[in-house]
Picture 1 (cartoon, helix red, strand yellow):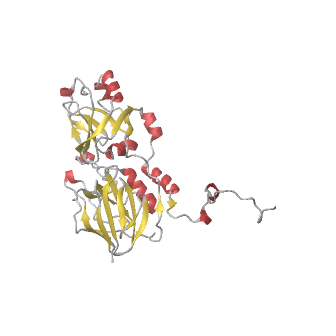
Picture 2: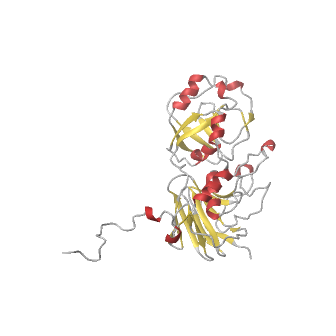
Picture 3: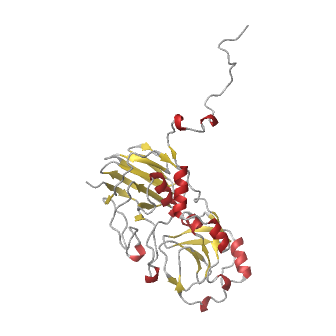
Length: 340
């Protein structure tokens, strides 16, 4: 009998996501996939499985789940209050979820998108070589209370109880940007002001894009009305007609006529996707050579993370750094009695 995850209670924006659909842009379909791909790499590392398996993406709020058989789970992305049959579980860790147990996930304490991974992946029917929901394109649907999500075969059921220090991408900061096809249309002083400006994520946004608030004059090209509609991609920073910046996210449109001042590098896109309203962001232009030097493919990232996974409960016999822990404090003479 195939294992399944029963959704007893679903949050308001819960979907199945993986790395998305490659090669469909020519047909007008954005790749889609997880808003935070780093979280997929973390889940794959914690469970020791392929990066391409699907997980549950939860926007802002989790839900309640029940396992029909023993399965492994891992929690990554935006941290949420979590418990398994009432016992608190920590984020960025893997656990055995026994048949009949209930996993309860609350609201995100930081960031926007949390992820529930299962050993073997969520095994829904693929469409165009992906299981990812792409709601703006009418592909897939929101997960609803009462859904039974099939779980793939997991050959590593006994390998749980691991923890991983997450990459920090929930507090904003500096986001690196590559020049885009329209960058040169923006005057040099406008580009300099763009880099010097402190932005904040606004509440307006979804998996299509994130709006940014700022103080000062709008960002315009002076050639706004002469730019033709053309191909757009995830990470593009689009300036609307009133000079308001939007960063395009996985379910963005594929064609548009607004000018784009730059494109967020893939490694920093999760900072924007996970930024909550009010989170500060700044942008810094880098060259293609600098971006390539800093780039780490997701598979490389997953492999690096897998090497840094630690057991939640460490066995002293396997702790090569045991002497670095202060297991005993105080001082003794070294004698079994003190001379008079």
